Image 1 (cartoon, rainbow, N blue to C red):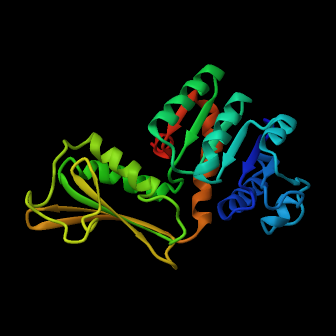
Image 2 (image 1 turned 180 degrees about the vertical axis):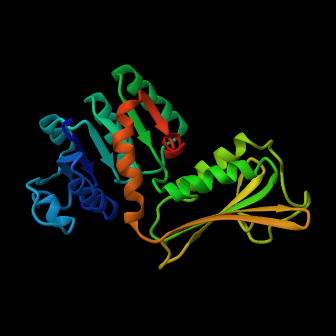
Length: 267
Protein backbone atom coordinates (compact mmCIF):
# COMPACT_ATOMS: atom_id res chain seq x y z
CA UNK A 1 0.00 0.00 0.00
CA UNK A 2 1.41 3.39 -1.02
CA UNK A 3 1.79 6.26 1.42
CA UNK A 4 -1.04 8.81 1.50
CA UNK A 5 -0.62 11.99 -0.52
CA UNK A 6 0.45 14.88 1.70
CA UNK A 7 -1.85 17.86 1.20
CA UNK A 8 -1.81 21.49 2.29
CA UNK A 9 -4.87 23.75 2.10
CA UNK A 10 -4.73 27.53 1.62
CA UNK A 11 -7.86 29.40 2.63
CA UNK A 12 -8.62 26.56 5.04
CA UNK A 13 -11.01 28.60 7.19
CA UNK A 14 -13.08 29.78 4.23
CA UNK A 15 -16.33 28.19 3.13
CA UNK A 16 -14.73 26.08 0.41
CA UNK A 17 -11.52 25.56 2.36
CA UNK A 18 -13.35 23.95 5.27
CA UNK A 19 -14.99 21.48 2.90
CA UNK A 20 -11.58 20.62 1.46
CA UNK A 21 -10.17 20.03 4.97
CA UNK A 22 -13.08 17.69 5.75
CA UNK A 23 -12.64 15.77 2.52
CA UNK A 24 -8.89 15.33 3.01
CA UNK A 25 -9.26 14.21 6.63
CA UNK A 26 -11.90 11.65 5.68
CA UNK A 27 -9.92 10.05 2.83
CA UNK A 28 -7.30 7.49 3.99
CA UNK A 29 -5.40 8.04 0.72
CA UNK A 30 -4.79 11.69 1.65
CA UNK A 31 -3.00 13.26 4.61
CA UNK A 32 -3.53 16.83 5.77
CA UNK A 33 -0.10 18.15 6.77
CA UNK A 34 -0.66 21.91 6.65
CA UNK A 35 -3.53 24.40 6.57
CA UNK A 36 -3.30 28.16 6.13
CA UNK A 37 -5.64 30.91 7.26
CA UNK A 38 -4.61 34.39 8.31
CA UNK A 39 -7.80 35.00 10.29
CA UNK A 40 -7.82 31.71 12.26
CA UNK A 41 -4.11 31.07 12.80
CA UNK A 42 -3.35 28.81 15.76
CA UNK A 43 -6.69 27.02 15.78
CA UNK A 44 -6.99 23.33 14.92
CA UNK A 45 -7.94 22.86 11.25
CA UNK A 46 -10.28 19.97 12.02
CA UNK A 47 -12.18 21.91 14.67
CA UNK A 48 -12.54 24.94 12.39
CA UNK A 49 -13.97 22.61 9.72
CA UNK A 50 -16.50 21.17 12.20
CA UNK A 51 -14.67 17.91 12.93
CA UNK A 52 -12.73 16.64 15.97
CA UNK A 53 -9.19 17.87 16.49
CA UNK A 54 -6.79 16.61 13.83
CA UNK A 55 -3.53 17.94 15.23
CA UNK A 56 -2.89 20.37 12.36
CA UNK A 57 -2.83 23.98 13.53
CA UNK A 58 -3.75 26.71 11.08
CA UNK A 59 -0.77 28.82 10.00
CA UNK A 60 -0.75 32.41 8.78
CA UNK A 61 2.41 31.92 6.67
CA UNK A 62 2.03 29.84 3.52
CA UNK A 63 5.72 29.77 2.60
CA UNK A 64 6.70 28.60 6.08
CA UNK A 65 3.97 25.94 6.11
CA UNK A 66 5.01 24.53 2.72
CA UNK A 67 8.73 24.58 3.53
CA UNK A 68 8.24 22.94 6.93
CA UNK A 69 5.70 20.23 6.06
CA UNK A 70 6.65 19.49 2.42
CA UNK A 71 3.23 18.57 1.00
CA UNK A 72 3.01 17.15 -2.50
CA UNK A 73 -0.16 19.12 -3.33
CA UNK A 74 -1.46 22.55 -2.32
CA UNK A 75 -5.21 23.13 -2.67
CA UNK A 76 -5.93 26.86 -2.91
CA UNK A 77 -9.37 28.39 -2.37
CA UNK A 78 -8.38 31.92 -1.43
CA UNK A 79 -9.03 35.15 -3.37
CA UNK A 80 -8.01 36.42 -6.82
CA UNK A 81 -5.67 38.90 -5.10
CA UNK A 82 -3.53 36.17 -3.53
CA UNK A 83 -4.07 33.09 -5.71
CA UNK A 84 -1.39 33.88 -8.29
CA UNK A 85 1.36 34.54 -5.75
CA UNK A 86 0.32 31.44 -3.76
CA UNK A 87 0.44 29.28 -6.87
CA UNK A 88 3.79 30.68 -7.99
CA UNK A 89 5.24 30.08 -4.52
CA UNK A 90 4.00 26.48 -4.43
CA UNK A 91 5.54 25.68 -7.81
CA UNK A 92 8.88 27.21 -6.85
CA UNK A 93 8.89 24.95 -3.78
CA UNK A 94 8.07 21.88 -5.88
CA UNK A 95 4.47 21.56 -4.66
CA UNK A 96 1.74 20.81 -7.23
CA UNK A 97 -1.03 23.44 -7.00
CA UNK A 98 -4.71 22.60 -7.35
CA UNK A 99 -6.43 25.97 -7.56
CA UNK A 100 -10.15 26.66 -7.36
CA UNK A 101 -9.76 30.43 -7.22
CA UNK A 102 -10.69 32.25 -10.45
CA UNK A 103 -9.41 35.47 -11.99
CA UNK A 104 -6.17 34.30 -13.64
CA UNK A 105 -5.25 35.98 -16.92
CA UNK A 106 -4.08 33.92 -19.92
CA UNK A 107 -0.64 35.48 -19.48
CA UNK A 108 -0.47 34.37 -15.85
CA UNK A 109 -1.54 30.83 -16.75
CA UNK A 110 1.16 30.70 -19.43
CA UNK A 111 3.77 31.92 -16.96
CA UNK A 112 2.71 29.32 -14.38
CA UNK A 113 2.80 26.60 -17.03
CA UNK A 114 6.42 27.47 -17.81
CA UNK A 115 7.28 27.34 -14.10
CA UNK A 116 5.63 23.91 -13.77
CA UNK A 117 7.48 22.62 -16.80
CA UNK A 118 10.77 23.89 -15.41
CA UNK A 119 10.13 22.16 -12.07
CA UNK A 120 8.83 19.00 -13.73
CA UNK A 121 5.53 19.05 -11.83
CA UNK A 122 1.84 19.33 -12.67
CA UNK A 123 -0.66 21.98 -11.67
CA UNK A 124 -4.35 22.65 -12.16
CA UNK A 125 -6.41 25.84 -12.25
CA UNK A 126 -10.09 24.92 -12.33
CA UNK A 127 -12.97 27.41 -12.56
CA UNK A 128 -15.29 24.61 -11.43
CA UNK A 129 -14.68 21.24 -9.76
CA UNK A 130 -18.23 19.94 -10.17
CA UNK A 131 -18.30 16.93 -12.48
CA UNK A 132 -21.86 17.87 -13.46
CA UNK A 133 -20.72 21.37 -14.43
CA UNK A 134 -17.89 19.92 -16.50
CA UNK A 135 -20.35 17.73 -18.37
CA UNK A 136 -22.57 20.79 -18.93
CA UNK A 137 -19.60 22.56 -20.54
CA UNK A 138 -18.74 19.57 -22.72
CA UNK A 139 -22.36 19.09 -23.85
CA UNK A 140 -22.64 22.81 -24.63
CA UNK A 141 -19.47 22.72 -26.71
CA UNK A 142 -20.87 19.78 -28.69
CA UNK A 143 -24.24 21.47 -29.19
CA UNK A 144 -22.59 24.61 -30.54
CA UNK A 145 -21.59 22.67 -33.66
CA UNK A 146 -25.28 22.44 -34.57
CA UNK A 147 -26.74 25.48 -32.77
CA UNK A 148 -24.38 28.43 -33.34
CA UNK A 149 -26.86 30.93 -31.85
CA UNK A 150 -26.62 30.87 -28.07
CA UNK A 151 -26.43 32.84 -24.84
CA UNK A 152 -25.02 31.95 -21.43
CA UNK A 153 -26.75 32.96 -18.20
CA UNK A 154 -24.92 32.29 -14.93
CA UNK A 155 -26.26 32.85 -11.42
CA UNK A 156 -24.28 33.34 -8.21
CA UNK A 157 -24.66 34.94 -4.82
CA UNK A 158 -24.25 38.70 -4.53
CA UNK A 159 -20.88 38.41 -2.76
CA UNK A 160 -19.08 36.84 -5.72
CA UNK A 161 -16.21 39.08 -6.78
CA UNK A 162 -15.83 38.34 -10.49
CA UNK A 163 -18.31 38.53 -13.36
CA UNK A 164 -18.73 36.60 -15.49
CA UNK A 165 -17.84 33.53 -13.46
CA UNK A 166 -14.82 31.42 -14.32
CA UNK A 167 -17.19 28.62 -15.28
CA UNK A 168 -18.98 30.85 -17.79
CA UNK A 169 -15.69 32.00 -19.30
CA UNK A 170 -14.42 28.43 -19.60
CA UNK A 171 -17.74 27.37 -21.18
CA UNK A 172 -17.45 30.20 -23.69
CA UNK A 173 -13.89 29.21 -24.56
CA UNK A 174 -14.89 25.59 -25.17
CA UNK A 175 -17.85 26.69 -27.31
CA UNK A 176 -15.61 28.99 -29.36
CA UNK A 177 -13.45 26.01 -30.29
CA UNK A 178 -16.43 24.43 -32.07
CA UNK A 179 -18.05 27.55 -33.52
CA UNK A 180 -16.98 30.24 -35.95
CA UNK A 181 -17.41 33.75 -34.57
CA UNK A 182 -20.94 34.84 -35.39
CA UNK A 183 -22.32 38.17 -34.24
CA UNK A 184 -25.86 37.41 -33.12
CA UNK A 185 -28.98 39.51 -32.93
CA UNK A 186 -30.25 42.36 -35.09
CA UNK A 187 -27.26 44.17 -36.61
CA UNK A 188 -29.02 47.45 -35.83
CA UNK A 189 -29.97 46.64 -32.22
CA UNK A 190 -29.41 49.40 -29.68
CA UNK A 191 -29.12 49.09 -25.91
CA UNK A 192 -31.36 51.71 -24.34
CA UNK A 193 -29.85 50.70 -20.97
CA UNK A 194 -26.09 50.06 -21.08
CA UNK A 195 -25.23 46.40 -20.57
CA UNK A 196 -28.75 45.13 -21.16
CA UNK A 197 -27.53 42.63 -23.76
CA UNK A 198 -24.80 41.26 -21.47
CA UNK A 199 -21.09 40.80 -22.05
CA UNK A 200 -19.88 40.12 -25.59
CA UNK A 201 -17.77 37.04 -26.35
CA UNK A 202 -17.07 35.63 -29.80
CA UNK A 203 -20.39 36.95 -31.11
CA UNK A 204 -22.63 35.72 -28.31
CA UNK A 205 -23.61 37.13 -24.92
CA UNK A 206 -22.91 36.18 -21.32
CA UNK A 207 -25.24 37.39 -18.57
CA UNK A 208 -24.25 37.41 -14.89
CA UNK A 209 -26.98 37.37 -12.24
CA UNK A 210 -25.93 38.24 -8.66
CA UNK A 211 -28.54 37.79 -5.93
CA UNK A 212 -28.63 36.80 -2.26
CA UNK A 213 -29.95 33.29 -1.72
CA UNK A 214 -28.43 31.99 -4.96
CA UNK A 215 -25.59 29.47 -4.84
CA UNK A 216 -24.30 28.54 -8.33
CA UNK A 217 -26.24 27.80 -11.51
CA UNK A 218 -25.56 28.16 -15.20
CA UNK A 219 -27.57 27.55 -18.32
CA UNK A 220 -26.60 27.71 -21.96
CA UNK A 221 -29.55 28.48 -24.23
CA UNK A 222 -29.33 27.57 -27.92
CA UNK A 223 -31.80 28.85 -30.49
CA UNK A 224 -32.60 27.43 -33.92
CA UNK A 225 -35.44 27.50 -36.40
CA UNK A 226 -38.57 26.53 -34.49
CA UNK A 227 -36.72 25.16 -31.47
CA UNK A 228 -34.52 25.90 -28.47
CA UNK A 229 -32.16 23.74 -26.46
CA UNK A 230 -31.27 24.49 -22.84
CA UNK A 231 -28.36 22.85 -21.02
CA UNK A 232 -28.37 23.72 -17.33
CA UNK A 233 -26.44 22.76 -14.22
CA UNK A 234 -27.34 23.65 -10.63
CA UNK A 235 -25.08 23.37 -7.58
CA UNK A 236 -26.78 23.41 -4.21
CA UNK A 237 -23.90 23.08 -1.73
CA UNK A 238 -20.11 23.24 -1.62
CA UNK A 239 -19.74 19.57 -0.71
CA UNK A 240 -20.78 18.78 -4.28
CA UNK A 241 -17.41 20.03 -5.51
CA UNK A 242 -15.37 17.74 -3.27
CA UNK A 243 -15.36 14.56 -5.41
CA UNK A 244 -13.82 16.67 -8.15
CA UNK A 245 -11.22 18.22 -5.83
CA UNK A 246 -10.35 14.75 -4.54
CA UNK A 247 -9.86 13.47 -8.08
CA UNK A 248 -7.76 16.52 -8.98
CA UNK A 249 -5.39 16.01 -6.03
CA UNK A 250 -4.70 12.47 -7.18
CA UNK A 251 -4.55 13.15 -10.93
CA UNK A 252 -2.39 16.29 -10.87
CA UNK A 253 0.60 14.21 -9.78
CA UNK A 254 0.43 12.30 -13.06
CA UNK A 255 0.95 15.40 -15.24
CA UNK A 256 3.62 17.95 -16.03
CA UNK A 257 2.74 21.58 -16.72
CA UNK A 258 -0.21 23.78 -15.72
CA UNK A 259 -3.61 22.49 -16.80
CA UNK A 260 -6.43 25.03 -17.13
CA UNK A 261 -9.84 23.47 -16.59
CA UNK A 262 -10.96 20.39 -14.69
CA UNK A 263 -12.50 19.09 -17.91
CA UNK A 264 -8.98 17.93 -18.81
CA UNK A 265 -9.32 15.25 -16.12
CA UNK A 266 -12.88 14.19 -17.05
CA UNK A 267 -12.91 11.99 -20.15
